[in-house]
Amino acid sequence: MLVDYSGYAKENNIFPSVMIAQAMHESYPDGKSGLAKNNKNMFGIKGQYKGQSSVWSTGEHTTSGSQFTIDASFRSYPSYLEGVQDYVNLLNIDYYNDFGVNKAKTPEEQVTAIRTAGYATDVNYVQKVLSVINKYDLTQYDD
Image (cartoon, rainbow, N blue to C red; front, side):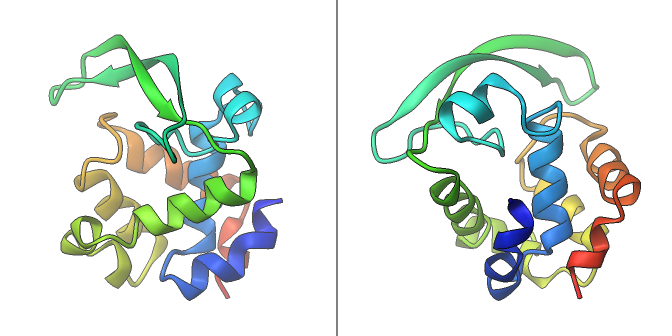
């Protein structure tokens, strides 16, 4: 399904491989998390979407890598399409642009910029997302 949105990602300077890998990682296992199934939130985006959210337990990391769990509000979408559009729109705001997300020349640069901007607290986030890209040869969708 995410491959269908690869053109939208490309048009907005997001590597499709990054979008797909983040969705697979964030909605582990492979789109089957409760957040993805129940709230159409495949990317683990916190906050509200048009006033809609749902509270879920989530693992966070300190800057030194220690893990802890919190309950957080996550965006709830009426459709997967709106979830994908919101994800792409989020990565196109000035805040993420200041970290070079949309100027990245490679998927690795983009994932690194996304992580540096604070999208994820996991100190191993970049390696985990890149591992998904490599395992499933997702760069094929970047061409």
